[in-house]
Image 1 (cartoon, rainbow, N blue to C red):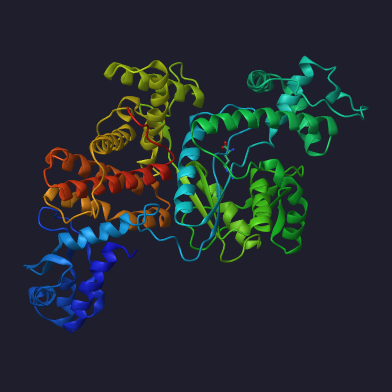
Image 2 (cartoon, rainbow, N blue to C red):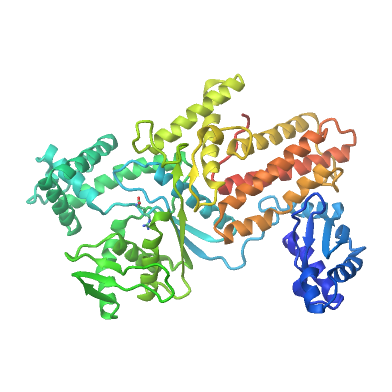
Length: 589
Ligand code: ARG
């Protein structure tokens, strides 16, 4: 369906043209004075300069022309030259009926030319537990992916595991210290390696910090870890087998964690998957004259004349020939282009890595790793802070594990639910989990991604205000009215959304009608917070309508049935939105 704003604009544009004014002046926007009107056009103000007359002479003419247009209830020309528009309630109802006839998409057309878009998010590091820093990438990336899918694009999420650095050498070194007899350390061994990993996830998570601590104090230990990393990266068989084990154990655990967050990935590739592409890539950069030696390291210049800040060269190989984070990211672009030829790659990463990605993107473009039309987008997110305004930490000041954060909030939510109602423990726990996830995700997504925000557990878990639980509460309220209605009667034949009977009903209908425009903007601007803002307004409009209207006591059968259809549409809109945000609503709460 055409966006309602465009439909309105087209009428106003026509009115300007028919009266001899340029169409560019007919642009309509949402009203910034909702007390006066629903939509407005300020074009006459600008047109007055071109046509050298008073603005109200233009707005008067246009208003006169639009009188009798069935789209509008009123068109007022207001001095000095504004056009105030109100939609005809019947026109609005018809627009909503068309949305209603398309229950999967509510009139939001899928894009005409689907793109292949890869999205690099999550970015967990193998063998290290997920911490809150990974939370934002997972939540935002998942939502961006779902919005893109809803718009009809081919979205491919890649977790991009950190599985290639010194942490691998550290783990290998520590394993060797503890158990030097393991077959993985026997260089003369040629048989098959055991299928079973020589550690559990619990042990692995303890081994890494231990090893990392030791390497900071013990130079020889650090040397050994670097040597192990080098040997792993140069094909030592026993170490490769250990890497397999580390990956398997770790990835299983990560999948469990992400599942709890309702986050999933199409691809579970890691930095290590990029390694085979490095030699050829580097060779080509040299052959093409882009890469040169600078103080022993191989670099590519990426600065541009218009830079206001210094953008240092992109380092491709260290002086000892070892690859870096950059090398891996560039080689990852190589396989992504080869296997998927994406129109766009979006990176959802901490905004502190912005300069780094500027270097990587410029280097990829300059050296021809991507096509000129391939878009590379950095979606940098801000820091999640505690109430003290500092990065979120545990009470003891350590890095908060994601699992603990989630289970704390689950517990908090359960207490709230149990305090409010008498529920069976099992159902209460299940509901708490669903609501807690909405609190976490909405708390994050309702902020523009690039901004820092304060993770305020009390506020996020509140059932009132701009929160996930408030949205879910609204959906549950609608579900319960619909159930009540269905228990008493069935919808009469010909039941349909009717022209609004009250201001609060019309306000709800106006919010609903913005659905397709909102979704399109959220996609184009990579902006899940727009979806949040929409459902917050929609939930408020609904609750206002609900408090003003006696739905179940309505005597006129068709009017009541119209309300029910309107409620169903509201519920659908809210449900589609929370689905693209990556959470769901319970039956009761
Ligand atoms: N593993 C990295 C980290 O924990 C994030 C990876 C981001 N993605 C990328 N393509 N570099 O900081």
